[in-house]
Image 1 (cartoon, rainbow, N blue to C red):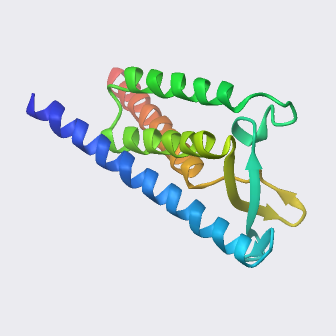
Image 2: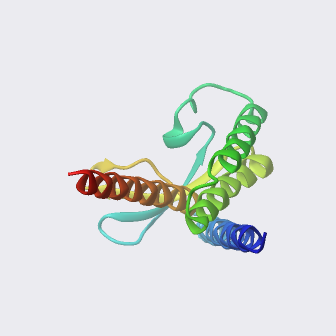
Length: 161
């Protein structure tokens, strides 16, 4: 019982921290861009902060269609609840980062009907689709899960040899 309570507290704390970082970064960058009346703020030769509103799903997929934000809110909520149900064996810190990131983008959809993406990574004229901290937390978490699973698979096969 105590371990489950501790695990849930870790997940909740990390989710809240992730959500806070995501929402604060979006607010700070959006306010900066709007107050300076700019759409692009050059940070380095390969990184800009931009004002991009994603009406679709990941990487702007389906954004060219005029689909209701309610559809994406419902879909995001269903996916979030499925993640909560299915991710019982995942490290609680990783689980918290995924949940916090998902909630961060869900908050945008509820408030704005779309998601604010502002990180524009590029090499010369090639631009990776704009993203935000919520997306970063989710991607990093998935990469950590894949590394962990690959490590477990390799260790299992080494022990069977």
